[in-house]
Length: 241
Length: 317
Image (cartoon, rainbow over all chains, first blue to last red; front, side):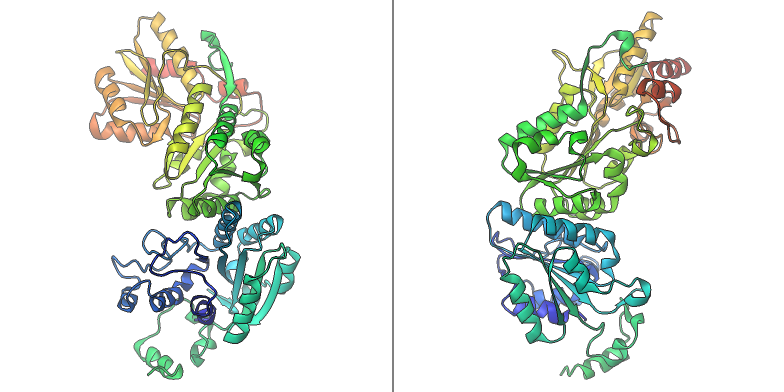
């Protein structure tokens, strides 16, 4: 849930240039959900955009469903990369950005990373290489939701100060409240229009389980479904009618 | 002793060089061919492509994992990337990326592992790719090829480029004896019968094909008729030719420059045990690392020469 506003801004804020009726359109922007476990938010946005019927959302993780537990490019049109082994999406995104440049195309590549995910060394290999190649058409968004599998990121492996790190690695970096939709949209637009010869990073400060008080407070909800009672309370808090 | 010496087999180019030269030719033919490198291009010989096509060449530094991911991204946007490193770094350092970013989505990425086996010599065990084929074969959807000489490596490189999907090519460091001369055909996915024979079959790949031919000559002097197969394509595996060899010759010796686990021996044993079980002997590196020395010294010490093939054959007869 921490990345809900980020995904909403991309899919419904006029940023991700895509055509749900034609998922293979060559000029489309590419969106890579590198933090593959965040795919339910993407599936919801895809349903809302018209990639598939909303009823399909209820087949999530069920036998035969194209909505697998982590994104599978071979199952669901509109998914750009199979992810789920953390740390790999930024490299894939860099390859896409280089392909666009080789072909002289204007489409962008957006990669959404988790703040636990950036523990992975491959992310920093990709960050260095993107800076070397000066891919302004590559935008990395770090969903800095403060928590990962077994604890708070500051305790498990402290990757702060994040903005300074990405800047030091050669990226143009912005830091933004990832739940403030207007601020997010402004940051994403700035990144999308950049042509400064640097890849673009956005550190989005978020909270895991944002909007649900008892989840926000407890990292133990990582990847754990809510009980029926918890779901009812959560929907009440979110104002779902 | 060097492989092929007892037969005075002419020495050709290293398979890594034959690959590099062919990649450069393919670069001129296909504008979608791109190369990603982890700073070993002058060893794996993608430097030849770099000279002609610097705009389509991306050196990402000593970062194999990122190299694989970048190639996957290029492939998913329609490019035809080739990546390379020493076989052991290519497979062992970046295996998760090969599995997750290439095999699982089925990306059209061609992966080259050079410096295979122990015949790299003095650089020592840290640089020796002795497990790469087992690992490559464990990537669902990959095709896997381990050619033995210059001419067959050129054909293998072209076959892989024409194949739409992930693939692995194994190349070696030393100059390799020429096996494919005039009149011998090589076909992707088909084991080559280099020599007909009725008493037993020696099945080999890579540099060990030369040793197999040497062993066949020694045994012929004793009146033993040995069939020799070059099984260069591991996936898809030419079961029919191997099963026919089992049926017609009644015994197999499998020789390869690889660990016992997961190599050609495993595939041959699995194949014949289902279709036509016959006694098999295995000549390989076993379950150990080698050491630093000249290639010839290492092949002798670790039992990868025609002598071990002859001994194994005599056991069978």
